[in-house]
Every structure is written in structure tokens, then in C-alpha cells.
Length: 510
Image (cartoon, rainbow, N blue to C red; front, side, top):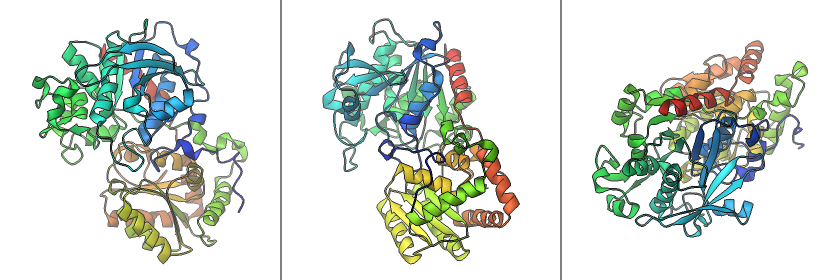
């Protein structure tokens, strides 16, 4: 089986992709048009972008992609620099890293060195050099077997404290940020440390997924240097625990989420994860915004073909044949459905399993790639055994294969119970695969029901089955299928507007 030409499906290294369905872009393809740092206006705002992961070095999900793409999109508007921990992957990529500052310890948070490197395209990255905390195998958060590191509170308190240190003039000489841009719970204590010091640097916290909150035992307050008075409902206390994310939500100047719909959803009891009251208050104060994530325009296959002669039907047929061969499916003229996702409850995998039989009985086929909860992995393997030739499953993840699945499939199943933003539905549309998704979060904001995909209301088996039937009807109507594919592939998901909105928030914060 010969794989379709790479001039039509841009290649991606699987080594740079670790979270199926959340982030599928190689750092080698990011921002090919980014301006050099020399092009940054001399009097622009200085922004420190603080993150626990970035695709250039290591990632576990969509945060890594955003951390790689958004700062690059911001460079034409402000002087933005990234702060990350000095993980083993960073040290291996750069070797000895020049030290630009020494950051003192505080309570049980150890002292460390602050290094500085530049990516090949000129993005400035500050690196926390603390081998005892970060030079380890595994992911940013746990060991190679998936167990969380027992000292994650200290590890990410060090990251947060470093951000506060840099904001108060303890970082590289001659560079003090006007704004801190924090991301998710690992950076949430930074705004707290600033408040407890009486510092006034404005902070913006982006919530990529409210479900991950960084909760620890309150006995750790002293070790982390958190004042006892801060252990309060108006502080870091969260249902009897210490929460890094609660610190960020309470003390930050402004909050953002990664889609407008998700910004509304997290103010409700259903999706507010226990913080809905505080988030609703921030919304009423005008301090909560939803800004949609973007994707790199290299995902548009028409960039590799002459647009005037591009035929999405023939193009997809070639890739569909490849995908069927790769997954051991029979040749078919029926529709090809795909799942590219973490196999977890949040993603509605149980709903997808429930509708698989409907897809096969109506002449469709299904290919699945991803990894996650063991019982879902087992159910997927069993599904492939029961419907050999019609269902193909790959437990694990390979970036090139996933990209081929977007290119070859007719429909992408995304029945997520909640989805702060989602990226797979954007990738799929650019490749002419029509997403079938629950109307929630970023899925609701990026899919036009009946025009670029199919949305259903309640996250139930019945709701998904109804949307799948609509997909079958569309597949049987050639003209309608062509029109929907054309509309989907014409959708624009770049970072330009989002970067401008973030810059406006930086200025408004002071």
C-alpha cells in the first residue's frame, strides 16, 4: 500500500505529538511566516508567557500547542518571552544553557538558575534550571508509568514563584514584563505570590481545562510559602484543599478560556467544577473572556496543490484507500468514520462505542486511533474483532497516521461531554472531514451545523445516532456532500484575531 503523496498531506513527526485528538502539529511546521525578534516594535508591551509545556520540547495536550503557537503569533504585536521548567527534553535539545539570573528559594521551594535560549525561529525562552525538580524521565507531570510526581506542588510552585520573581525585577537584567500570561493550574500560584508581595504586575490566566485544578493538602501551605490568611474561600482554599488553579482564578487580573461558549459554560453548576460561583462573579465584573484557539494554516491541503484544480472528492478518495489499507479494512464505497481522540469518559468514547454497530449496519466503516482508560481500550479492541474488515483500531498514537485519517475520512466523531476548545474538529474541517460533535464549548464555536459538520444537543447515544443518520443522508447526496466539504475546508482558524484580542487585554489590564 503506497501512502498518498506528502505534497498533499503535510508530514508530521509522531515524536512531537503525545496526546491523541488534542494536539497534532509538529514544532517544525509552526509559524513559518513569523517575524524575527528584530521586527518587534521598540516600545511594545513586554509579556512573559508562563507554561508547563510547549510543543517545541514536550507536551501532553492542547496546552503544548497553544504555548508554541500563540507566543509566535503575538511577536508582531508585543515583546513576548516564554518561561518553562528545564525538563530533560529541554536540556537534551540545547545542551549547556547560558544562565542569566539566580532565583532565590522561598520556604521549601528551592533556589534555581534562570537560563535563556532562543528557538531556531527566534522565540526567546527562559528555562528554569533545577535538575533535582525537572531533569527526570516521563511527562511534565508524572513518571514513565503515568504516576504523578509526589513533589508536583514544589515543582510548579517553583515555576509560579519564578514568574513572580521575573515580574518583580529578579530575572534577566534589563527585561521586566508589563504583563504575566499564565496557563492552567501549574502557573496559578504566580498571581498569588504577586498579591502576597504587594506587587502590581497585571496577570492574565488562561483556563485550558477547568477540570484540572492542582489540588494539594492544606498542610503544604507553609512549605509553599503561602500565608495562612490566604487559606480562605477568598484565596486558595477549595473545598478543604489547597488549589493552585483557585489561586489563579481568585488573584489574577483577568481570566480567559479557549472558546466563548466554554467561558459561559464554566459559570454554570454543570460545568463549573465547583468554581462556578467565583467564575460567574468574574464574568459579571467583565474579567472573564473567551478567546478561541487557532491552528496553523499548513493544515490546509490546498497550500500544497493548485487551488484552481483541487478536487476534494478525488483527493479524499486517494487517502481513504490508504487509510482502509493501513487499518485492514475491506474496500468499500460507503462512508468512512474516524475517531482521533484520547479514549476517556470526557471524550464520549462510550457514546461512540454505542453507535459503532449503527455505522457498520448501514454500510459505513470506522477507524480509531488513541489511548486512554484501559476499559475503553479493551472495548475498542473487542469492537475491531467483532467487525473485522469494517472497524479498525490502533491503540496508541502516531501523528502521521492521524493526519492521514483526517484526510481520508468522510466524518469525524467527537461526542465530547465537554470540550473547552478542541483542535481535532478544526483539523478535520480543513481536510474536508465533516465533524459530528456534541454542541458544547469550542465545538459549538467552530462547527456550523448542517454546513461544515453536524451538531447534536444532549450528550446521549440517541443524540449521536441522530447526527450519524444525518451524515449518512448527506453522504448519499453527492452535491450536498461536495458543498459541505467545500464550506468546511474554507473555514478560517488562524491565530491572527486571537493574538490581537490577547494584546488588547494586556493593555486594558494596565
